[in-house]
Amino acid sequence: MNVHASRLRLKTRFFTFLVVLSSVCGNFSLSWGMRQFGRLVSLSPLAYVRAVANPWVALGITLLILWLFSHMALLSWADLSYVLPVTSIGYVLSALAGNLFLHEVISRWRWAGISLIVAGVFLVARTAPHHSGAAS
Amino acid sequence: MRWLLVAVIAAATTISDVLQAAAMKRHGEIRDFRPGALRRVLALLARNKLIIASVAAMAISFFAFIALLSVADLSFSVPATAASYVLETVLAKYLLKEPVTLGRWAGASLVACGVALLAL
Image 1 (cartoon, rainbow over the protein chains, first blue to last red):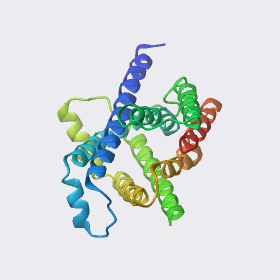
Image 2: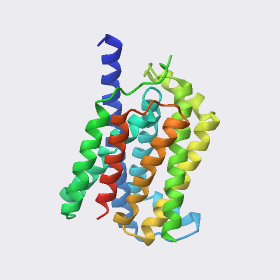
Image 3: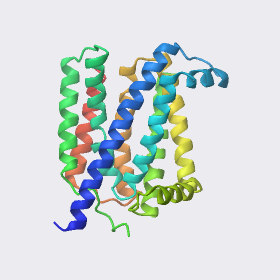
């Protein structure tokens, strides 16, 4: 394992963490804000503008912009077939956050789903993030 | 109506991710994370046609998701993303020419099944 490969791994871990954190917090904040806002069934752009004025929705959108940038950076050196499964650990964290903070019930089927996702993430995370012709 | 929205979300997400991955692969590894260098990269990417198309597809998927949430439960909306896992892995192999190893296929399939189970 040379220095470049271990640096790349560290960088990949850091950006995966950033992608997951921004998406979990962003979605949580969005759904929290939309709950305060109420039902949004409108074709009028004005209704969407009013929804965005909600501080939680605005925070959620800011976090999703951070998600977009960190996702793009990660894809500049890691394969899509690596990034996609590895960042799906966010589903697990979202389910756990719903259980902890919103007191949503996690059924037995959901625990089974969570276990499968964790197993899949573990499998893919063990492969090298980048296989195809080195990004020079 | 819901299944139409699910199809729109899965298609738009897949298109957005594949375009974004293609653009970033072409751009190459980002190594310099100083603010000035990042600003230059952003300015460059903001004019990239693939990135613009990817963000447009992402916006379609985002608004379709919000619309779906207003007519269906969150637990119904989740499997829409599970369908795109397998589709995106297939496209990553054949379109982006990524060498998808057995471990990655197994991992992506486990994740897709797991996400679908979350809906129950």
